[in-house]
Image (cartoon, rainbow, N blue to C red; front, side, top):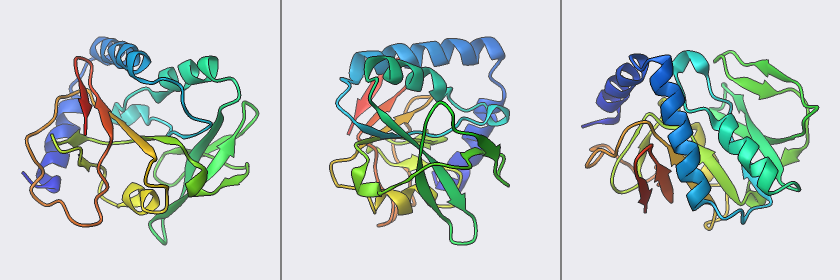
Length: 189
């Protein structure tokens, strides 16, 4: 299937999950993450989940990381919709966030992080395949940003659903994940 087809299917699959299912899946994702992540990172890029899109609650994983690695430096993307790029901005517990025009909470202040400083990142997705390629929302922000990062960056995805066999329209700009965690399985690529 193509990215466009998968995007439509998986947006719909997410939209029908009940609050109880979402909470259960988020808890299972956290348990899987705790078993996988060793804590070997000093700079981490995350993203703010959009509740209306029933996205994975990355706050659970970030709270776990903050507990395990108190000195962890955390960054979030600030999107530039005119260039289809984003910058990673370091945050603290005092950072103020505001909604972007996409409805994504973004930090309004903080230090710019060089992409080459980032050790690990949570990469949002709607679907992924058995080769580690993912379907995002279709603008290419993350793939462009990931090309600026070090080759050894640990790229972690989370999905409520298992992998599809393949995505038919992968191109040379698509950057695969290293790991994708589902409620019942860990995929390593």
